[in-house]
Image (cartoon, rainbow, N blue to C red):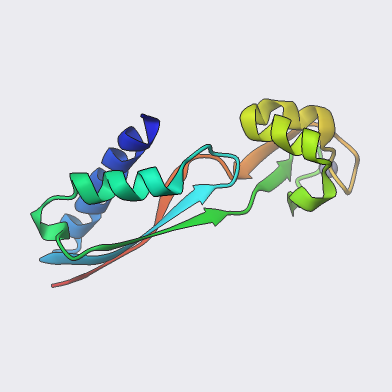
Length: 132
Ligand SMILES: [Zn+2]
């Protein structure tokens, strides 16, 4: 049921933007989901359709997955997690418990396992388009 909570958050955030930008009607909302975030895209899409308010009547919700980006705390290097470089078991483990990533992934520059996930978790709005 967590897709419904996410859908609510998406609509709330998009509504805030629409209001700030003085949009009469919202036509398109681009939603990005981090690939480490467990979201059923179909359920989210369905929830968005059910929850959308009047000024979202003709809104197209585009939901895309975002790559995982990591930043080394030791040397400041940033890199993208290439899932194909991980074996399927590791991939699965990271998908369910992103914290275990630290066991498997090291900074490609300095080898430090101390990094943060700067992108790839959570859900955010990329763009909100509408008519004024
Ligand atoms: Zn490093």
